[in-house]
Length: 120
Image (cartoon, rainbow, N blue to C red; front, top):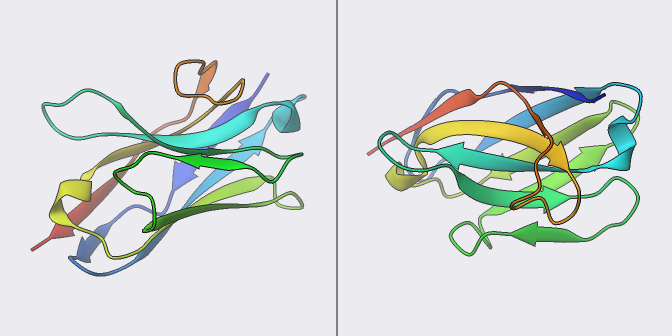
């Protein structure tokens, strides 16, 4: 019932910024929390952060808190992940996902990943 399309990945230097987008669609796109996960080569998928369409609350992993910010635009049905002060360890494929709050272990829908590469 929910489709997600992540975009905006690319190559960026350490210390730089990048903003990812997750366009949502489907009959009940606003009924779920929407967030981000990432997976680096050779590592397990890691939770990044979550937000909701109705409430203003957000939830971030400790590894990105203070550097990454999730925002949303209901008119565009799009969730964003603004990444600042990027580090080489942030290099990963980033996925947007939707499901019940807080989403960490409750994902119901996955989007296609977008690759973020941070060079040193």
